[in-house]
Image (cartoon, rainbow, N blue to C red; front, side):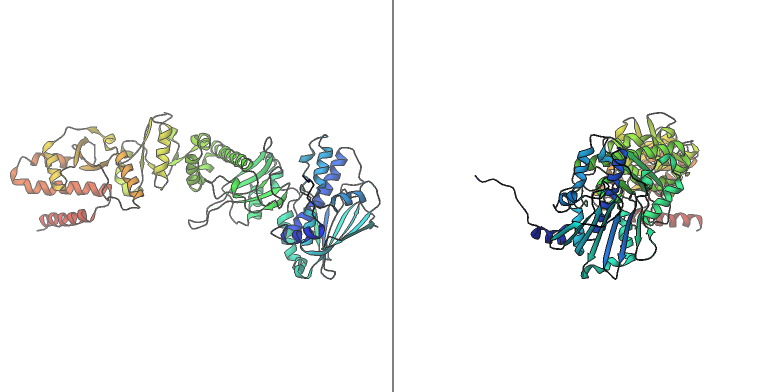
Length: 597
């Protein structure tokens, strides 16, 4: 059996590199400038290890556009290369000098964390995507003779001793006729700012005039949070995401072991119900931009998050555009969830008033997050706020005055349930306003976490407003007759100052009916299942009606009064059905006829 190693001829691989190495040709700018940054980082590493000395530390990268010569020049004053290194790392495709360097010095400190960007060894060749000829002038920090190297688009190169006097490397790209658009200063500056806007060394761009620095060498996420102000965080957000409004809050992440990544995430202020909601997270790799929108690291229950993440250990493919490890991404996402929860708790504890001001905007996401992520719920459960019908905020613990069990009363339709709410207030009971679609699911979720805690809508526990009263069989028969519902359940209660009657629907029955309507897409029954009539025995009109039942001559009046009480109770509880509206109109006409013959 014959054995061997596969070989690739340069003339065959270069056309592939030129056309398909990266899906976006703009990336050649990132790769070329990243190599320059790596060269400086390597030299600084050697200086820190006392392997060499440099006369100054004025490190920089210069990019020059020359429209007349049709060239782009990228120059650095970093480590430079010897002839042997050019032979090894340039003349042999995909032999990464970065990996060799890290391997050589990994025993002396953690060289992998020094910010070296290149890993695959292919980045240099991306310049051939826009060039038909590339020159390189380089001189090693060791003082070895300078090297001049030139290569055409077919991979044929020439190499000789050069005349470069200063340390570092200069690469000259001779741009093809088809790609001359890259010599437009405005376009090039935009691409350079996008991919290299936060590199750790000054990058100067010139088109023949005065050179202009295009990057920020100290991005906010690399700084200590204790040194930064809210205004600085807000300004950075507006700059990076071109938003005019301040974010609601931000989370500064500085993870060490085992993930080792940094970043700042922002929760933007919603601009409207029709605004598309999706995460915008810019991914950096040692301060080099690699991807515009990494959704995988954002928890799905906070889709509006925006931010930047710098992950120097993130497993990427050759183009650095795609994540290659689901396990790593899950760990990053889990850490983000934890940090968001920690931030919410910190806001609640340090600035309750400020937390309440943003609660309305973040509430849907946080509630959904609690239902989606058990760990997230456990971290934020004590800071979950509910708004009451007076506009004040309260936690469940505060509502129950510190107790871990009890009943929480709420309204789901606000003003439509105003009469019920007023009765609870008269009894000194607080009523929460839970009028969002998600609230019904969320309160059931909360109850599932504490079987001694119950949420009851204001029309589900009318008995809480007064004492249970003695049943009245004659009144029960009358109300069943005038309602046309022989199966109507009638209860009696004593409610001080209350209406003659109320409608009660048990919380369980109403929730079941709501669920059935939801699955039936709103085509369920209009009258809630289990609707009951609670008659207020303490009301003077009810007492008078009960007394009048013994007078047969007043039977018609009693029926009119009972029907008025019943329909009025329905109106206090919900909208009337078409049949009930007709009955109410006829009743009103008859009553007016008696008042105004």
